[in-house]
Length: 211
Ligand code: 5GP
Image (tube, rainbow, N blue to C red):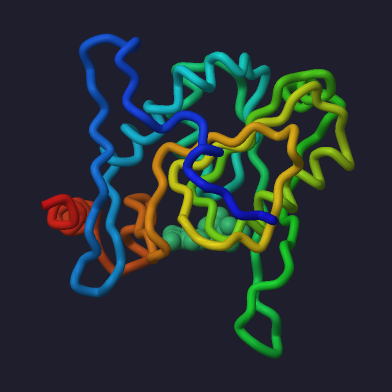
């Protein structure tokens, strides 16, 4: 339960039907600190690789899980041309130990007006940057189905860590991952300052992870 093999993953492969541009999603190696650094181009390519299958899903609206899902969702908006709803969920540590147990909902959306009104009866794509234990995604799908009546739900992540998942998703939820990655810590360009680096330093390390 909760386990997925690559056959379950939709999208994520370079698509010849898209024309001459081949999307290179080669596996990155870890940096000296054991973390894997992704560049803006890596993120953009992984997101773009899903566009053909996401277009087939015929989305009505995107729900971006912040902060990591915001930039991937924005990249998708250019291609899918649907509005983005921003939510914020936080997987927080138990006070007693370091096991991350609970998801806290910091921000949801208003269903009575604007793009939020597109969710009921619509094809909804939930976007996040990484599927680690799947806890956050499970929570998000459950909250969505508890509060709304979408016609169809899809989950989109830039990276899916290949590991035993704690969370599960309902059978009828479609799953799209830009790239399957090993179970290591991924560093994303928008977080460069959080690791004490500017974007140029981050991108330089990320290039090293490609060679
Ligand atoms: P979950 O364990 O619920 O799948 O992931 C929860 C959240 O933890 C993700 O949305 C992401 O914000 C954060 N996270 C998990 N693994 C990583 C990682 O390798 N790098 C970064 N930057 N965040 C991560």
